[in-house]
Image (cartoon, rainbow, N blue to C red; front, side, top):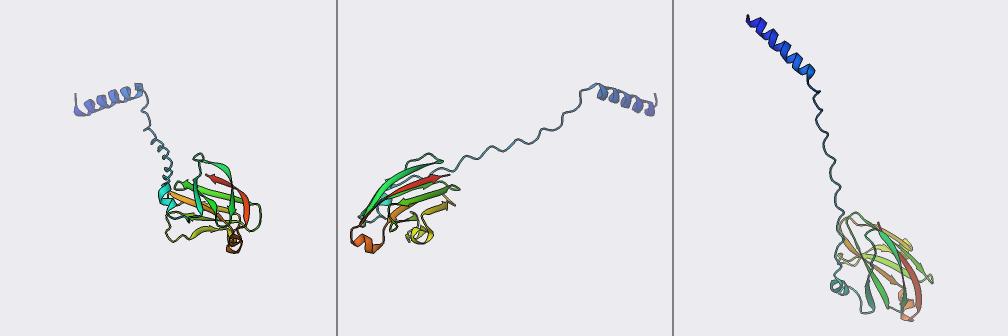
Length: 166
């Protein structure tokens, strides 16, 4: 048998085998990336937070689902008030809606890690609803207060505060 005939027979056998074989499967599509685990909520260190509060403020840590809302009620009497701590994970948004019993009560929202004490939301100028998105995990302090002239006269005002974390 000549070399040409041997090659022809080999090609014929290969073609016959290929025709009788099941079709080759396409390569599998890349697997979907696993959903990233949600960023953890930061741990509230009540002792460290207490150190940044005034003697007239009482700390209360807000308990709510990872994503959800709750409404708390409180009172400002003179300089005395409850201060609310809310842990917020990176990427989450904190919304605090303040409903005071009089027009002389406000809230400030402060990042507890900011040692300057600067408000990320100043209620006297920005209004009764604060919306803050955390770039990294943070503990936010919601501080109800009344202006100094009212506080010096030991005036009292009640409020409800709806806190949502999404």
